[in-house]
Amino acid sequence: MSRQVDYYFSLSSPWAYIGHKVFRDLVASYDLKVNHKPVVLVDLFSETGGLPLIKRHPVRQRYRMVELQRWRDKRGLSFHLQPKFSPFNARLADGVAIAAMEAGLDPDPLLRRAFAAVWEDELNLADPDTVARIADSVGFPGQKLVERSPSDAISAVYENNRQDAIAADVFGSPVYVLDGEVFWGQDRLELLADALKSGRGPYRSQGQT
Image (cartoon, rainbow, N blue to C red; front, side, top):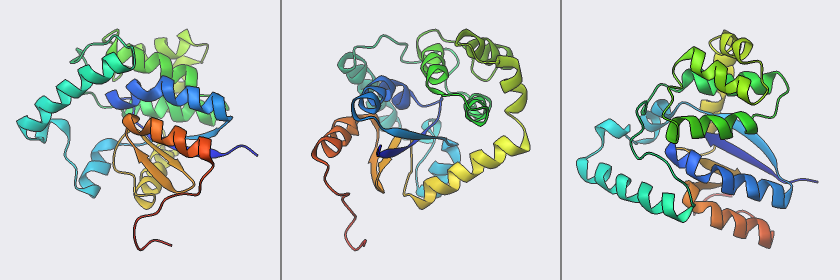
């Protein structure tokens, strides 16, 4: 039986973009079942003591820029550190990913293209026409998915993902949850790989059962 990973992310997250290919390589190597859970980051930050980028201390913002450069090199990527349309409201794009899953589609082709669209091509994922074209480019029904994105049904899934994230001790993007163990950040993917390779049981915070 395939092992499962809950994958919490937002298309607005550079770190989810940076780690996505490595994560998908793990998915293929270990035949993982992925539960894709797009989640609104602002709400997660506010509920778990974090701050959106614009409100962080300048020291933290400067360090983030250095880290982006390090990981850009480490992962062999080429992208803009400050793309034209970032940060942006990811509700539309995240909702399109949810709508694609609702339609029975594997969201991975869309996610790969959408991440690159933000960070490499500097496209605006808050623009419906742009998102529809991106979805069309991977063979998805872009206009239908864009029209579906703001629906109450998709909003309910988005909210459920947020509630699931809080319950699972998720507080950012990306987060990979294996057997209840939280791996926060794409820089934990090597640790996730170790856990999968060893087959060990999940680590717990002290006091957890």
